[in-house]
Image 1 (cartoon, rainbow, N blue to C red):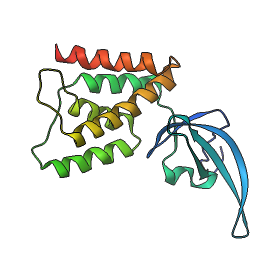
Image 2 (image 1 turned 90 degrees about the vertical axis):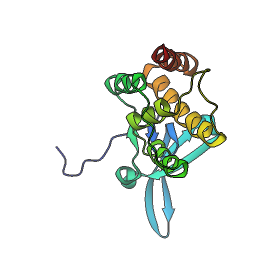
Image 3 (image 1 turned 120 degrees about the horizontal axis):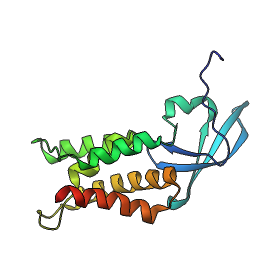
Length: 169
């Protein structure tokens, strides 16, 4: 057992970066920065056509983590089934909380946002900002479910949708 708990990520591993969701490590590279040699994880977020470089020694602070276990995924699905908890706070305050949950990188928190903002056809219209947050949370959840199950985003989306619609019944 080593003293420092260095997370072992390798190229091709799928990881979750809190602010961006699921990405894939494409390589580990050395870069010279201000006279120091820095080891970086190069993470690709294909859907967003974005590449991120995270210093390997800053992995813990950055919140980078492995994909959720199947257990956490089923926990998230259970969360979706629950009853929406909508606080009576002003929307700007709630929106801020939802945003923090989405960017926490915590799958259960993300599932809570999806659950709380989900609307069935017969419920009142969502505002533009509600829909934006809902879609952001839904996309994060769906991508991680897809990456963990290895089934692809379409079937992951279907799986999430089935849980949400079964809840309404």
